[in-house]
Amino acid sequence: MKRHLLEAADLDRDDATLVLDTAAQIDQALAGREVKKLPTLRGRTVVNLFYEDSTRTRISFELAAKRLSADVINFSAKGSSVSKGESLKDTALTLEAMGADAVVVRHWASGAPHRLAHWVRGSVVNAGDGTHEHPTQALLDAYTIRQRLGRLEGVRVAVVGDVLHSRVARSNVGLLHTLGAEVTLVAPPTLLPVGVGSWPAEVSYDLDAVLPKVDVVMMLRVQAERMNASFFPSAREYSRRYGLDARRMGALHDDAIVMHPGPMNRGMEIAAEVADSARSTIVEQVANGVSTRMAVLYLLLGGSPQ
Ligand code: NCD
View (cartoon, rainbow, N blue to C red):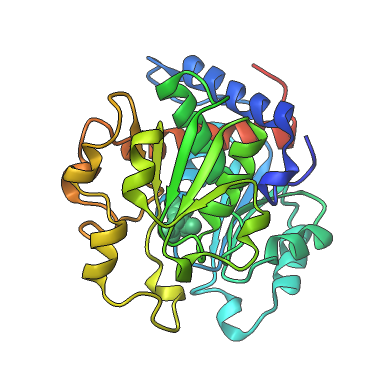
């Protein structure tokens, strides 16, 4: 493993498989235990540095570090000296002086974790940077697919919706390709990035044509907060063409699963009855996020197995 986890490309097939296998071991070790805690990272310090709002990812990393017995510092831009204009570099140097072994960073600027990695001695984990990457989300998604379907090699995955603004899509396309899955991106042309032709994925504009052929449908949130223009005629029109409702879900084969990284716009990209159906892995994804991030922190900080 490299020292930092900044993007999906930092993991080759062996590294990625090691993370997933370690997460599975952690799940097994903790199953049925009353105290869900391992002593592995005792005495180590993990800083969660969040410059952008987050519910799941922040709590998930916090819980992951705590379950490994690390000391955890949660730092959010609101209420810190960042709101007084302190730069990322000065914040990083402060953390460095306090002896952080790992810095988990979420930032609105694509590339911020890469900059940070030059300034600190500890490991940097990208918890989502702008529209760029979110590698631990891709790992927990891969873990969830493997758990449900028993494999990743040859699994056909449709990633549907706002690909343009989605760091989840970017990281998933990279990691799923590394792990031997076949990805098809499905989106209106306005929500696909320039250069998507060079990604290791097929592209389609027709959700109905793709659904019967896939094992996994990964729905993406329409990221209104990153849209400074109109990317589609109306929410209703978007939903009609690219939303997953119960009728469309009926086109999937019997074992196919439906994923969403959260937070969901229920009724927009995904209907409530689909999100709450037996095919949906949305709640499992959240649970798997904790064990996957424990595996990442454990492997990066090099604790010895207990
Ligand atoms: C995603 C994110 O923040 O990139 N959510 C998450 O981490 N669970 C996806 C999103 O915001 O739509």
